[in-house]
Length: 158
Image (cartoon, rainbow, N blue to C red; front, side, top):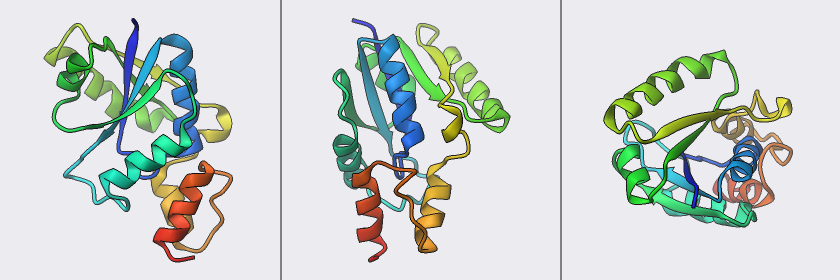
């Protein structure tokens, strides 16, 4: 079985993330969406909330959602995955992602990193921008799956 890991904080998941998951699923038998715990970020949603939103938003067969702590390459090895999927929206993403891919290769040369670009309509989209729009009272329904828009409204009491 060809299995890939798509890691991220997904705080919250956007339509751009969903697009990358759909693209990855065309290439792999299974995609594990790994929701990372990142001590350097202050998430709006707790880990269990992010996992629940993803499970509601993803209706693609062959896609599984799982929490991830520790090193990505160790998680990938434990999941018997041979590839990591990373989304690239713009040149600004590339430098960081390239550095991470090289470090992961140094840690475990058996794990390949594959970069996928979302549809053009999602290249401007990020979780940070979605949260900012929602916090300022804007409508985010065009940018996120319905369960996410509902969770944002509930979290922000709108």
